[in-house]
Length: 488
Image 1 (cartoon, helix red, strand yellow):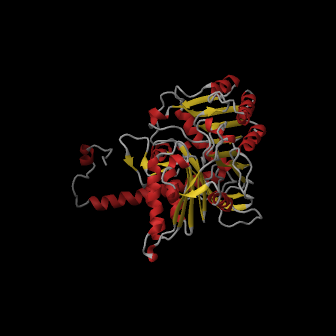
Image 2 (cartoon, rainbow, N blue to C red; image 1 turned 135 degrees about the vertical axis):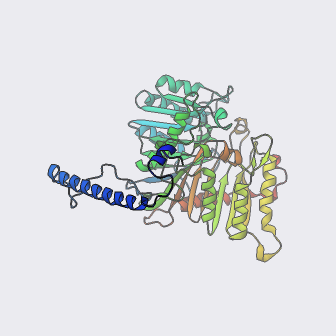
Image 3 (tube, rainbow, N blue to C red; image 1 turned 90 degrees about the horizontal axis):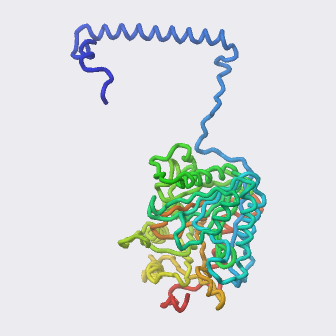
């Protein structure tokens, strides 16, 4: 490090070379200097006692801005509810059921008093985009109507991926004309990905996060899973920071900050989760985000969150996703990306953890995905009984009538969650490399292992959803199908 004192001045001060009398001189100066400092401190203390008699060693000055420890707890009466959209015609022989995403959205809009922030991929809540005139679009149309009504009364902000030319703009134009503030995030320019996240922050104290897009099909024609957390300002504030990052990047010409300003940082992550009561049960919670370039200081990137949840599992790992590909499926040239796949294989082989994958099969399923899934499932057929691995892969098919098949991009299990014996993970991303490297997504991670209330833990509820789907008539072992086109 350069000195602030020029070299010629150092010579003048006698510091260029050793002097026989230099050490004694310096010692004397040091003693004299310490005496002066002590005298000044004593004088300052005496002056303080005269001018401010209330401040003394027995009455220290108050700290107006105490620092918050990383293990800060939240005392809000947070209530979490799992939500689902069950496509019309999909019926389970099971008592496992949860409130609908549609009803939760209605309640959030109706209960909003000051603000509503929505981060979304795209908007098509009416049936104009499909021209099918399907009556099941009524729920989406109802949500759009309610949002337009509150847009002129509350602060409504929408961060949305910059729409492509072929995507409808009608919903956004309606909301904008009703008073909503809308910013389009040009993810293609920023990261070559998309804004794929799906969450709401209401009145800075309620949140929704899950797989459902702002699409009428997500309410009646696509199987979805999400969660709503009520009366939880501490968690809402942290999710609000992720929204503010999108909002900032929605300004024209704004690059991705590196590093992000401290106002976007968080103390809550996989190592220091937020301690809060969920449904009267002590819980450890944090929010992860992708891509890594969108993560301010302290934020756990989404891929690290997934790998960490798997790493902590001791008994089982259950995964339900629409797409599972150990590749960068939207990148050119094609690249292999095995972070998640390797972790699953490692956990099954080294830890003997039970692994179950429930993956969607529909008209848009890529054949290569089934090849990768068969490779993973084949590990269970190891001949050595001492090394036999407990891995199973099943495909989930949402049935469709002839009329329902006419609806594009519908009739699919769109879930994006994972549950282990310790943690519940509810995300917004499909499981291939692009979603974690280039695309904006988010996830809610909950450790609520022991329940102190009559209500089961979030992990237990999510496990019940998985097992209902796994053992249903809509799920079959991947080994039973060689041609996905005839099956899906």
